[in-house]
Length: 177
Image (cartoon, rainbow, N blue to C red):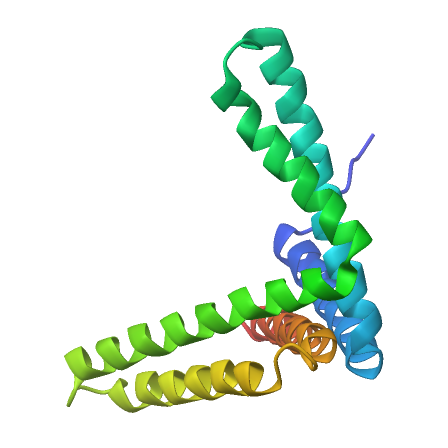
């Protein structure tokens, strides 16, 4: 009896292409309904915090229930997750504010790397990345908190589109080789 094995490169190429297309479709859906994507992400984060808090509380109860400081982590996770569920708009505003600080940090790091690389090839792209990150951070802060619901969904949607595009193009490059 002969067993046919699928070519691993062909299988990977197919999976990359399918994953890429699915991520691009999800990203495009997110562009059209960014508020829904923001609420989904915020709800998902709340669920992760609640589950993490419950697991942490279980472990603390069974292994070290008498130490007050061991109860802080589960308490913070459960209260934080509950607050995200009860006040989703405030949760999204907080998430987008943290994202803004990330973009400022990324801009600073990109400018530092660009300065270190100058005049070697690639310094311009690092500078451009820094400028774009700083603009995104400023854009968030200018519209914060009113635009948080839209920005979070749009940023995640754009990320999904580019992640999908990269996987799709990787699958194409693998087919050429």
